Each structure stands twice: as C-alpha cells, then as structure tokens.
Image 1 (cartoon, one colour):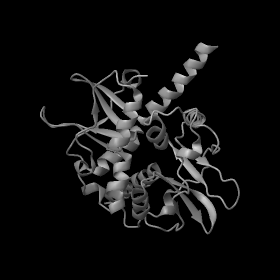
Image 2 (cartoon, rainbow over the protein chains, first blue to last red):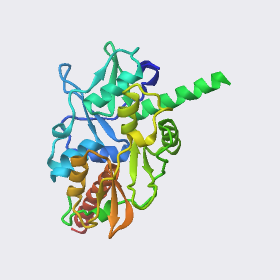
Image 3 (cartoon, helix red, strand yellow):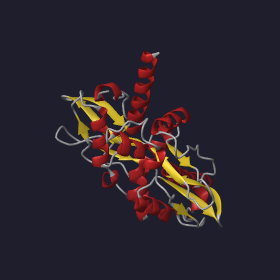
Image 4 (cartoon, rainbow over the protein chains, first blue to last red):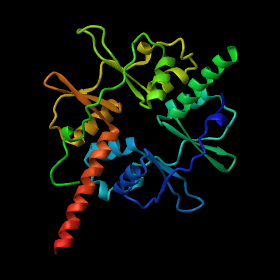
Length: 137
Length: 148
C-alpha cells in the first residue's frame, strides 16, 4: 500500500492569513470540518494549516480572546509535506508521529494533490486486509 | 467571549462511547471505528478494582502502523491509554478544561460527578460551546440594534 493510493483529492477550505481565530472557528463549524488551509500572500510565501486542536490547546487553554487573536499565531506554517508518492504508508504513519500532526500535505512535483489524514491510513489498512481475504476465498 | 464564563457543564456530552475488549485485536478496533465513524473507543474494566482505558486513532497510527506491526497480531491492551484522564468539577471554567487537555495531550476527557460517571468532553465539544456563545452574543447585539 503506497501513499498514492490514499491521498484524498478533495479541495480543502481556505482562510485568509489576515483572519482571526474566531473567523476560523466559525468557518470550521459552518463547514463541519476540523481543519482549514491558510492561504499564502504571494508566490514566495508558505501555506499554513490550523486545526481544531490548535484552537483548543493554543488559544482557549491560555484564555486568549478569540476575536483579537490572529490565526497565524496559532497555525502551523509551513505545512508538513511529502512528495514521494511510492512511499509505503508505514512511513507516512511514522512521519505523522515524528512531527506530531494528523494531516500531511502531498505534492506531486509542483502540483498539490491533497491531504492525507490519520483516518485515511486506518481506512487503507482495513480495506487492504479485506481485499486480501476476498482473494483467498 | 461572553460576560458569563462558559463552564464544563455547558459543553459535556453524555452519550455512551462504543467499547472494545482489551483482548481484541487492533484490527477489530479499527473496523469498529470505521463502521461507527467514531474514532475513540472505551476499553471496559474487568472488575471494580480495575481502571477504564481508552484507545484512539492516534494510538493505532503511531504505535502500530508507524512501527510496521501487524494489526491482527497486536492487542488493544498493548496500545491503549489507561487510566483515563478525568475531571470532576462540573463548574470548571472552559479555559482550564482546554488546558487539562493540552497538558495531558489527549483529546477526550472523562467527566465524573461525585463519583458517578457523567460524560465525556472532547475538543469538538469545546469548540461547539465557544461557537454557540459567540453566536448568542451576536444575536443579542443584533436585537439591541433593532430596538434602537
């Protein structure tokens, strides 16, 4: 099972880098998602990501005012990136553990393919064993 | 945030978590998670002197798949967190609930009220509570504006 097989091609919801933490919260709740991609300001800038966990552990836990906290104070920037599409998913899981993240951006050369999450990995491992069973029967 | 502080009681959820036995394999736990679309499973205790445990998607990804182990050979009891992280004060400010989560590095905290099991609080519950209070504050502002 390789990285290529588990990338989900769905477009992430974006947020402007000038937004505040409460804008991010409202966008997450309205779109029913748990992460947002932070857009870059120019071609030399990096993308960032903000997750539910960042809002809880970095802002609410320190009693910060969400409406006046810029989203960039809480975000992870630059992204954790992988570009070798033939890599075994074991090493994708290991990368997640080493970096302490649950979502990795996948690029093929320059093109952004999508994110890989920990749920994608679980789903891939379960479906792999299921197809192996089917082949035996 | 609003003038009245949010407390733990406002956000705690009292549903039952799905459970998985400590002797079950990680593979069975993964199937249960994907079927129920619930990525946290409770591990029940054997007797009243035992503690409850919990197993999440993060445990499985970082302790089984990242190590290259076979999920069919690893048992849930080898990767679960035990005992649970608990909170007992239902009137605790939401800020300290979030801090307790951040300090212990877990996303699900069990809540007990006077020794009885009360419910769970996750990071999603906290955000939902904050979002609802923001919206309520906006609504209140809106009605004031109309009455002027």
